[in-house]
Length: 161
Image 1 (cartoon, rainbow, N blue to C red):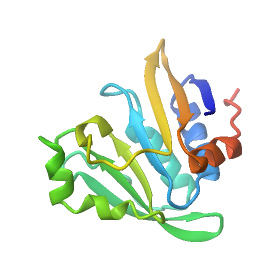
Image 2: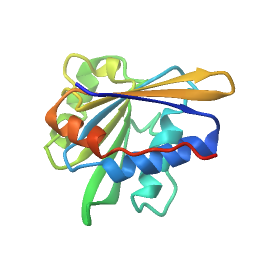
Image 3: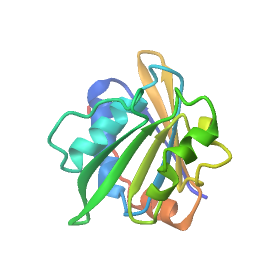
């Protein structure tokens, strides 16, 4: 499967990458976000959601575990649900909350700390790793399905100069 790597020198580069990823989205996509605390997972998600038409605040779902948004993908309204599983004490919490039903092939599901939901969390189409690198961030994406491959095929990103 396809890989994508880029260096994000600062917050504006992260926002630009989020916008590029927003243009590559497809309904039903499941995205796992990996990275240490402070690596930029929520900042990337915020940029992606704003570039997809969400006008309001994008808050980290650290305490609520999930936050739903209505965004535009390829001219159609789609639900995007941002999960932060960091505070989950067991995968059963994911099931008890009814989150599995959100992964219905229509919603775009973006999951921070997916390892906390294993083995009950549905598999990803795209895995994203963010890591601190110097003053910026390194981002790496890997497609794990046909839908993920479509997303990476559509992704075009040139870091801001």
